[in-house]
Image (cartoon, rainbow, N blue to C red; front, top):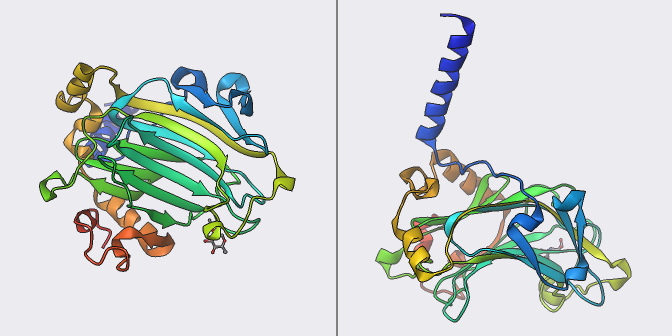
Length: 296
Ligand SMILES: *[C@@H]1O[C@H](CO)[C@@H](O)[C@H](O)[C@H]1NC(C)=O
């Protein structure tokens, strides 16, 4: 056997091992903004760069801005690379979320709460099912999110919703239907992102106000990866939730694996500021999903 053959056998073995461990989502494919997204409000506050492969969102005294996916999706893997507003960003919020329409909506949220220069951002996550949210978790990040682009991703299938920051799971919300909890499984969602002034609540609970002398505030985006089951009609949604043929429907993605749970634990132990699961004043009885999601 020559070296070349040995090399290929090696590659095959490595791939077999990877697919057996398997729970790391597929690598995102970078695409231009236009392929997957359109502005949803104040289009003049979105600046296109590098032929549309990156965009800047601009917030000034007049307006913030936002964009949304062209398609609606029921399950899949969605990610974005973002560099948040730097310097004095107190009062400024950047969000990346998935949401269905109508009442009793489902929603999966990343919200980045700005801060005074040198003070840490907070990443707040939340999950709404059937119109009910109130499941906030807040963490500090282990890096400065205003210095470089970092990836923020959601993996959503029938079994779980997992939130990732640079491939590290920071939260999991498992399907707890058997415990009487609603899980998003039949309402397609669109992806949204926006940058706006929220100085009535965002920084130190609204104590720190936006300093407009620093405007415009700019958040940068790239990558725009969407690998989802596109569903516009109820019939398409039905196929997305029952066919089970996509990679994220396979058992390897039904749960986080051991190394991922260890990393999630590291995030919880080192970076958690707030977790609704441990807020006894608010929830004297711990919400049912908390132990399954390994939040307690
Ligand atoms: C802002 O910085 C203060 C002081 O370090 C901290 O208490 C707070 O959690 C930070 N983040 C926000 C969004 O308020």
